[in-house]
Length: 204
Image 1 (cartoon, rainbow, N blue to C red):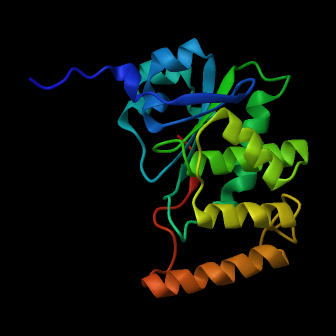
Image 2 (image 1 turned 120 degrees about the horizontal axis):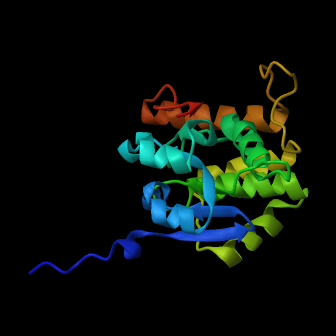
């Protein structure tokens, strides 16, 4: 007889600061967990959408406009920096004192690499604190391990003062980001790739 699976054993969620959570993919669709923690906004950083996100039951808890989907892989070539401003602004707006909603969940598949990268970037910008200090703070709340590519990007995020573009049109990268893109281009070339697939930031 196969062992009985307890669905709660599949859930992984950590509150990093009041109202801000990191979790795995399972948490993103588990309404009892979201309801218990008053989570009404979600940032999903995964390659594909989960079918449960589009149901009426789910949308009653997490409205479409409060669900940000970032199509991204956990890889040595994925550029998350290009989406970081949108992610941070989304979290800021949902956690602002004027917001009527509740908490924000940021998740990826396991809640170990992509989503912690986004939360660290958000807290660095919000607190104006160093990468080392914020990373240590988040590690005290959750077992995380952003991959080397994402740690490299967080260093760029710090070096650019949390703004990777020289211009408002977001066409001219600041020097640290441009140099990162050049290194990334070499990695892509070595893998025979032309860019990230899939990519994109959008409300669901």
